[in-house]
Structures are given as C-alpha cells and as structure tokens.
Image (tube, rainbow, N blue to C red):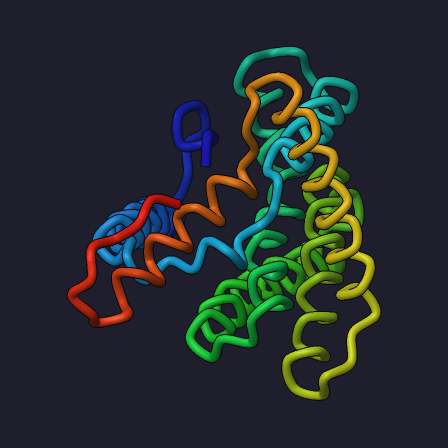
Length: 208
C-alpha cells in the first residue's frame, strides 16, 4: 500500500489499508508467540526463488523508473506467489487450521479479481497489467488449492512439490560446498533434539 504516501484517497480506503497492515503485524506477532508450534519440516519453500524473479520482472516491466513505482510493481508481482509457501506447507501436511487460514486469505484476494472485472466494465479504458498478472496467478493457485482441499485432486500440487524438492536439493548442495552444512542437516538435528525432549525419560541426552 505504498500509494498511501503519494495518493489522496477516500477515508474508507485509508482505513481499510491501515487495518490490513495492522492485522498483518498482529499475525506476525502471533507467529512469534506460537513459534514452538511451527512445523519447520513442512515449510520447505525457498523464498529466493520467488523474490529474485519477481524483482527482475518489476525492473523490466515497471511503468516508471521511480522508487515507489518500482516497489509497487514488485509488490504486485510477488503478491501472485506470496501464498505459495502456505500452499506447499498444506500440500505436505493437510492441516485443518492452516488450510482455514489459507482459504480466508485467498478468498480475500478473489474479491480483488471481482473488483477488477467491475472496474473494467464501468471504465473500459481501465488498465492495470501488473496487478492483473499477479492476481491471475494468485487466483489460479487458490482455485487449484480449493480443488485439492475439498476433492483431493490438484493440477498444480505435483508440479509445485517437485520444483520445491529439486530447488531444495540444489540449495543444500551449494550450502554444503560453501558452508560445510545445509539447512536439511540443521533441520534433522533440530528434529532429533525435539524427539529426545518429548520421550519423557530421565536418561541423559546423547549428542546428535
């Protein structure tokens, strides 16, 4: 919502955008508070694979080479993939609470699509290619997820998980060569420590 800084807007839009920002901050705080419930083994999405292409597309397709316009274009593109980490998590673990969160967030974005259709009908000259690209990608992922969640069928699940697995394999190989360790090794170590803590016995913990 960078347009809050350089566009005059009606009161309800300002209120809506500030409310959305505030609730997003609250969600992040809750993530931190309930960190112990975080299932890291299912959260495997490599964010660099999303951020770098979206940043490149923003630089190439921005309407104006100013800081705010470029950042706005980047936000529109990355919005199309912003929920992919949640989709991957839910594809790997069919959690009811996580799915409810994803459905609520995705449903909100569907209303954006309906708004674009309405604006196009009312204003034929209306054009917002960057938003449309991000929105179409996001709605496509969301509709496929709904199909998977309620029928068990998905056109994108296998592809998304295969790409995610391959990217993580490459990332682990690079980390092993550069750092001598990898995120997979660290996750296995953490998982071993967690399992020993939950065994409920009084034997001393052995080193992993």
